Length: 575
Image (cartoon, rainbow, N blue to C red; front, side):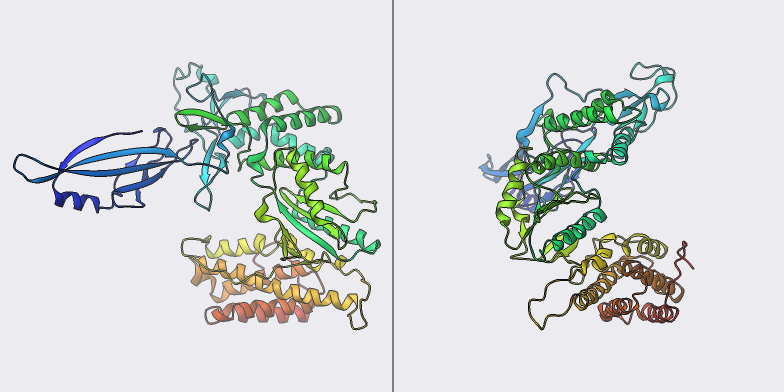
């Protein structure tokens, strides 16, 4: 879009005008109905202003505004300048979004009809918002990801005799968001839930939870120890743009195969035609506005919906089953009796390859990469790590060469006044007691199954039980550090910080901390509890003047627990 304007101005006015920050101007995007109007920000040379403008369901563009001055002389020989104002709109090159996969919507200048009916909604017609996706900028400020507008819905209309769409009032469409449509009775969400409970083999060999991932790792370690393998070579791999690399045609082929399988083995049989239609709608109506045309992606899933993770798991599980035909993969909840000591663990798009010390790890990873290429997927080369060069952090935990699970040691958090999650004093207590201090992954760092007896390499080596106790003491120390960081972040960012550090609230907070640590360590492990609380106080030592009441109450409650040798867990937060 180019627009030329000519102005007459004096030299002083020109210098004054070019030096101004034109932040009072607003740039409308191409879709004025849904697009927000963003302020201009000065970037680059004087007189040149760039702005990002993007609206609902359209690709962001860069609007470049440049002013050029051409001097001339009028009849009075007074120097004047002719200003040329040029505005150009150019689109960004989206390497991550792969715009080559866009296909224009032919013969349709507007969004397709979004009215549908479902028998489970009392025969009501429902309307979905016109654009079910939008583009969100990533943290690198260059690329974007496709995200579902899961909670956006149109406002309702007042009762009237005739509907604007020509429908009678009794069957006027009800406003419905994307996730509400997906959660309809006997819809896609209900179908995936039935598959998990009634046909879990559909997801095999996928691991569907963090707990299942670490329990599978512990079981594999036991099986390998029975065959005399105690040291391993590890490689962590990540799929490059996993959600955006899933091909729609291949996904529909996999989904139809799953529907045929479910129709034979599920009772009552699901309505597979309706399920296929709903998935086609979810993929087809993910439209964006690009260069004045409505376009849809030929590959990629919009993130943020209630089914995107399930679809990715089914797609990757189908790829893993093809790979497992020539190589065994360790399945969650299944006892493996093969003699292989090399395997792959996958949780969503995070792979962990395990081979013995004498195994060929590079050839192993090449086989995984070659299998993914058949499904249009690639590994991210920047995230491929091996324990030969660095430590392996998988699903938030450090995996050592003997498959011991350790809590990673992290530096203290750095605060920024523009980030954080400010919560009130009561919300901080609820947030810490219910979620933040009760991580499932931490419990596997204190799992007794990791204390497998290993052969002595020399006379001075400690026995397995002593080595296991040493690892647990180290994990308890790191656990205290991690809990201290979580508590300090909540306290630091809370608007009710003063109330949170009063004596009654500090007493309740200390109870939450002790119970959170104790739930991770387990019962009758008071020595590790003492080490974790000591590490907690050591981590917060620079802030002891502000946290003196909390640390005092923490010591008192710890002595009480040691004296009673047990903690009586209460279902209520405030005991």
